[in-house]
Image (cartoon, rainbow, N blue to C red; front, side, top):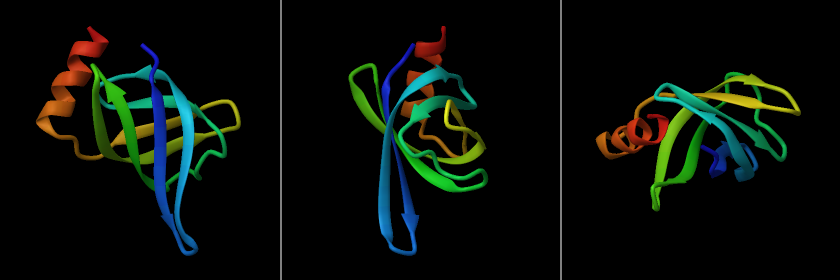
Length: 89
């Protein structure tokens, strides 16, 4: 499954959003192609639409390259977890 995603992060100069498209989604996290990926170790808020519902989840960047960025979810709501489980089945 692929979905539009926005990575929102706070920088010293203010908030910055980066748009992209998910490549893989799992219960633990996701990978995406982003325009201007964040740095490894950076904490972000991911916003994505799953099953016609917009979700926001905190995540940390685990790997990053111009081709793909990998995120690990930190804490997700029960509703988001149910949507993830439905999408990955």
